[in-house]
Amino acid sequence: MPAMELIVSAIRINGDNNLDIELICPKGNDLPPFAPGAHIDVRTPSGQIRQYSLCGSPMERRVYRICVRRDVRSQGGSLSLHTDLRVRAQVTVSEPRNLFKLPNARRYLLFSAGIGITPIITMARWLVSNGSHVEWSHYEGCRSSVAFLDEVSSGTLKNVTTLYLSDEGASFRKSVPANLLQPAPDTAIIACGPEGFLTLLEKRMAEAGWSPTQLYSERFRAAPAGALSNTGKDEFVVQLASSGQCFTVGAEDTIAQVLMENGVPVALSCEQGMCGACLTRVLEGVPDHRDVVLSAAEREACNQMAICCSRSKSPRLVLDI
Image 1 (cartoon, helix red, strand yellow):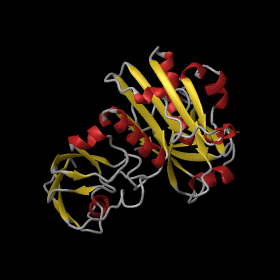
Image 2 (cartoon, rainbow, N blue to C red; image 1 turned 60 degrees about the vertical axis):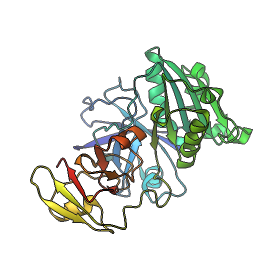
Image 3 (cartoon, rainbow, N blue to C red; image 1 turned 180 degrees about the vertical axis):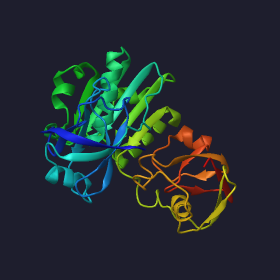
Image 4 (tube, one colour; image 1 turned 90 degrees about the vertical axis):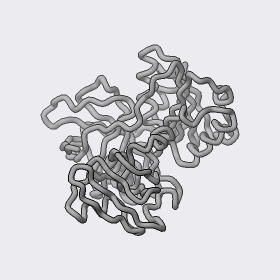
């Protein structure tokens, strides 16, 4: 995906440990369009590439807005943005990519936790402006940590948003919204947050009788250790549909690694199965999905896979490369 050199036009605090960053084209030109749920790859001051949801308005074509939470476990990405980024600095970003698109539904239940608010708030604004039925539950540790607090507590989203604060005894484990206990076939559940939050949401949905295909989610962190392991007990063969070339993927290899070692170009970004940059069509064979990008329905279809981490359940995969 093409890279762009943008300029930091503004930096603001947006709740405890949250940095609101605005990026513009140096010449003031319009930026590539995006839809709610889209993200961009950002090369941080530390040199690492990280993915951040676009949380501004898709109608504002000259500004990209992201909100970055300082993570105490950061390996340099969010930390370097918080400590080293300055207004007027040049930042390399990708064009927007959207693997978290809003589905068509009569009713939308939105769930977010922590900095998972960033894609959800863009969706909420969009849905409200289009007259959709929206109910949004946002979970946070305390009020001072809530990003976009004014907007969700007293602004245009107030009537569709309920805040649940752990320091007030309203964690997701203790406070389950009534709407989650009443499954409906014409409802889409949209969620973003930490792995534990989403795992518990999936459990609550199953207990209440929701179909897993009604959940559309995005994780900002990879699944627990092992879930995204790119290793396996068996080797398998990957064949390229365009040339017929075949390559063996060993137990300690990834498909992407093997292809690149053999001169086959591969689009990579996070290399953890989280961003979707390497999603590739599968023409034959059964993928062993190890990513956190594809939905349950997309996994069942077996027609695409994240080649940076996923493997194969069949002896051979034919990829649309």
